[in-house]
Structure formats: C-alpha cells, structure tokens
Length: 525
Image (cartoon, rainbow, N blue to C red):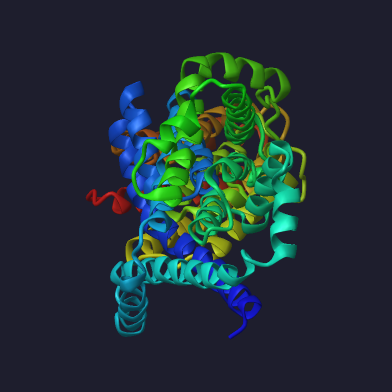
C-alpha cells in the first residue's frame, strides 16, 4: 500500500472512530453526567471537579455544553455552577490525547478485534455501548497508526519538507492551520491527536507543533454556532461562554508562545522536562493549553457573565405558542429532555387560565391557536425524542406517561373551551351565578400547572385532593348554580344544564390527570 493510500485509509478510520466513540461516550456519559451534577455542583471546587470528570468521560466540550443548556432549563443546575463545569470540562477532555502519545500499537489489534467481537455478540445495554466505545477508541488508534505509517516516507521527501516548513514558518499561520484541522474534524482532541501522531512520525518538532495545538482549541466554534440557533437568554450565554473560553485560551497561549520565543521559559520549557519524547511533550502542551486558561478565567467568570449579558440579555418574551424549554439541542440528552417535557406541559396547562384567549375569543368552542400550536409542538418533540434516541425501558415508560398527560391536557383544553362557550351563552345576570364553578376550574388549573411543572409528590397530592369532582362542596356548588340561576332563564334550565355538563366534563378530565400523575409516582388513588 502506498503512503498516500495508507494516509487516506488512516484518516477515514480516524473519522469513523471519532464518530463511533462520540456517540457511545455521550450515551454512557449523559446519565452519569447528570448524576455528577446533582451531587457535585453545590460548591465551586466540586463543580470544577465535575467538569473535569465530565470532559474526560464524554470527550466533547460541545456535547457537555448542550447538556448543560438542557439542565439549566430543567432547573437541575444554576448558571454559576454551569459555567464552572463548562470551563473545567475543557481540561478533562485532554486526557484522551495521551493515548496517542504512548507506544501502545502492540495492543491496538487486540483492542479492535475484541471490541468488534463484543459489539456483534453483546446485545444488552449498557454492555454493547461500552463495547462500541472501546471499538471506537481502537479504530481511532489504528487510524492514527495508518496516518503515521503513511507520513513516514513523506517526511524525507523534499517537497513535503518545503510545504511543511512554509506552512509552519509563522506561528500565526500554524495556529490557523490547527484551527482549520479542528473545524474539519469537529473535535479539538481529535485534531490534537493527529498533530501528536505527526510529531511521533518525525514530521513535526515540538516547537513547530505548539501553535498547531493552540489553534485546535477553537475549531468547534462554528459547529456550536450552528447548533445553538434558536437558543435565548441564559442558554445562549452558556454556549457563548464556551466560545469565549476557547478564544481567550487561544489568545493567551499564543501570547505565552511569543513570550517564550523572546526568551522567557514557559510552556515549552515545562513540556521539554517531560520524558517520552515529542508525543508526550505535546500531550502535556495540549493539557496546559486548557489548564492555564481555566485557571486564569475561573476567578473572572462573574465578570464574563456580566459582559455576555450585555450582548445576549435575558429573553423576557414568552410566546405562548412557542416551546420555552424544548429545543432541538435537548434531544441529545433523553434523560434531561424527559425532565423538560413536564415544564412545557405546565405552560400548556396554564394556557387554559381564564385570563388567556382560550376562555372567550373562540365562540365556536375551539381551543385558542396558541394552545393548539404549543400542544402540537410538544407532541412533535416527544415523537422525535423516541425516534432519534435508543431509549431505555424506563425512559420509554416515562415518555409514554408524559404523552398520556399531554393528551389529557389537550382534552381538558377542549372541555374548557366548551365551558367558556356555555358561560357566554348564559342569559343576562346568570353569569355571576357561575362564578363558583369557574373559580373551581381556575383553581385546579393553577394547581395542576404547578404540580406538573414541579413534579413534587406533595403538590401532586394537593392537586389530586382538590380536583375530586364528586366532593360534597362541589355538589353543593352545582345545586346552588342550578337553583339560583334558573330564574334568569325564561326557557327553564336548559342553559344551566349545558353549563353544568361542560363543568362536569372539565372536572372529570382535570381529576383524571391528577390520578395519572399520582400513579406515575406510585401513589394510591
């Protein structure tokens, strides 16, 4: 095989390995990351540790960024802790680069073979996901070996040396090349590993490769800009915080590089003290290119947030027909997405408040357009979540329950719309008599929205007890309505009965939702 063919094969395998590893790492890391956040973000030091572990586990600052965006929306983490986790996950993800620095080629074939056999033989989760992750790592390492083998003959070619010397003569040009390579691979760790492999084959020296390494840290900015479309407020500020860290780190490290060229011993001098040759030294450079900016930026995070708020202020607009919590980015983390759906359901529930359009503008008895569009958007999100992710049995059950709640809430909306029409059809003077029935519906809509949003067992129980439609107080309220308001209708109690029927339907559906929520938490009904 020619050196060019070997290099192309290596690049193809490297891309495939990156994709396979990323998919399986995110599948493994999503739930573990959430558990880390729950347990470790109550102090700054633990939040930084959480970031380190998350970066090492998931190997993608972009993936961590968008999981944090979803967790912010669900209230699992506050923005202060999220910024710390985000900054320090960049340090954690450098651990993977050390694999390319050590001579582990004798075990690569065994790793690829064993992981491939396990991937085909093991069908149960999470073991097949572990096998897929190991297979991806093995393919990455095998691809790097092929790249190194392909480059070995080229390093002695005059034309290759001239091109390389011209490209790396100026540190800024090398920085741009590193940035472009990272943008192409969509992974700064992957780009850094390629640079380390080039150094291992003798094509690059440590001094030449350092600005390349610094440039790789900026490569995912364009990808995040694309993925962040539609985000607002604190969510977009988290994404921009990661971009700010990358830009700050690149500028800082290039400044240190020029200072070192002027004679000040800094990163290069420290890396040169490492045993293991150029690959280990460059892996250390990659670590320091994230560690130094993290140490420098951590005390400045509150200031950074203030600056970001000026450019991306909090979004005060809350369009009733547009999802506030459910975004396409949330689909990447099913567990967090399942936490966000109840919050959106609570917004749909609150859309039935008498102060909203549902209670009077549609005289034909239909729901308001905002209610219909928001309900359809939630349903579409649930369908996409199931279609785009391999959900566990527990996650599938939760999604099924949430869709049941959604359908019940939409039926409640139809009933409340009918109730609004019945109230509007009451004869003059009779509407005041219906205030008790309307107040009962209004109160339970508010309790239902709060219980659905919080997913708190106590609040759900309060909602359940309050919404019992056959309670003696409810029966008395219905009798009083029929007795007092019948005098306003010269044609008898036909209008009154229609109002009571619509009230009974709405009340039964509201209580039905409370029972579904009680059952979801294992409470007796």
